[in-house]
Image (cartoon, rainbow, N blue to C red; front, side):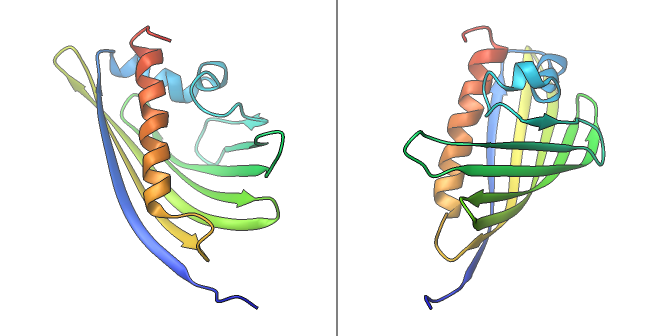
Length: 147
């Protein structure tokens, strides 16, 4: 059996968008809008206690499964969810994510904080942080009308 281990990490990614907090919030809350910058959900129940679930990946594999539960929602201000990420049959991480939205002059400041446990080297905080940055860039293009 290979060595088992957990790497704990917290990372923060910040973005400022030239879009109102209402628009940025709606991009998280509306499944059709969210599917334009995040993986399309198989199930989407955006409420405290609700779940978001998606499963997919490239045709040559592997399949990634995102299974989240919303823990806290303050419209246009804060979204907190916990989630697991699996690669095939292997759980690669468990995380708590907080999205904070703050009105700024001419837009919104978004602070994305993820606290995660990454298992057995299948994923790393550095790779996840990079992917999150790319995801938030795509969100920015959408809410700023470039997508």
